[in-house]
Length: 368
Ligand SMILES: C[S@@+](CC[C@H](N)C(=O)[O-])C[C@H]1O[C@@H](n2cnc3c(N)ncnc32)[C@H](O)[C@@H]1O
Image 1: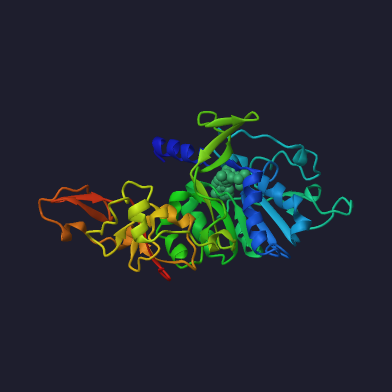
Image 2: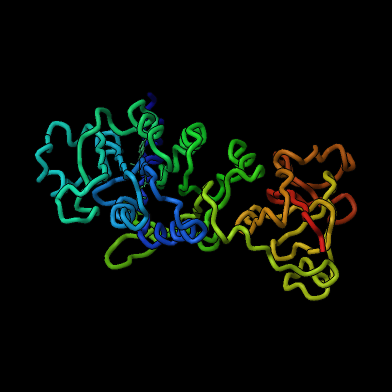
């Protein structure tokens, strides 16, 4: 491998070490439970790509094992030696005090923690009953060993390594299981992901998109703020899931087209109205809250619309990356415009065209 490729790989992997806050996990799971109180009852939950000794995912599900009515909790981690060398490695008492502790395995093997029964006979099943062992391999989610655990599980929940998203996505989808995991916001327009969102098979979680999510980081050089001595990093991320929750069934309150033109708080819409695209038969709606309630044609809206997508209110027809027709076919040969991949364009003035950022095309189910 060339020297640079190695460095590059290490840099990318380093950015995978973001640890999810307990409150973020709790808020998201509560939304699923609110919608269906038995959502986790009798289920086996797999938390892959975790760090069970430290992870709030393991903590949350172990602490709530009985309340949620879980059948089994499985949490696995990736071996220290398979992670970039800069990642600090700290042995826990949990491991060293265990009769299974083996100093030859501790860095090379992944770890597995399971919870199924009252091991310490205190009449409760909770975090103190987690059973520990080493995996045969390093805990890579792509390994046959972890795939077997995936197939045993009913629900997969985690914050996977962002750099391996394109491999994690098909790994989850091909399992046919229920899931909830954290991704970078941009992932929703990925060509392998978008069809699932458009087909209403996968959706955004309960957590709203604004402001990004805060994670604990181990990278001293990339800290956004310190909270109680912990290094925190803000990452533009969201939950994606196929577990239902109430927020996505709440329709967006909207004004009519006429009222938007009169009262919109956006200068691009107020007293101006909506432009039509030059290279696609739809109108440009620059903000989700400017969607006119009574328009019955196609509308291009920002990607962040997905945060507010209510499938009873709207239908998604596609995204500009796929739907935009070649702009050259619609404009003068000496026209001025920014070039790039497929995108919608609007006309600014004679022979001047504006390239519009990625859009999702939607229509009202019942315009009113
Ligand atoms: C974003 S962190 C999240 C950790 C934990 N789920 C949490 O949120 O607290 C992703 C974890 O996946 C691990 N990882 C990286 N590559 C992996 C792989 N191929 N298989 C399994 N885990 C991997 C990383 O080392 C890191 O610990």
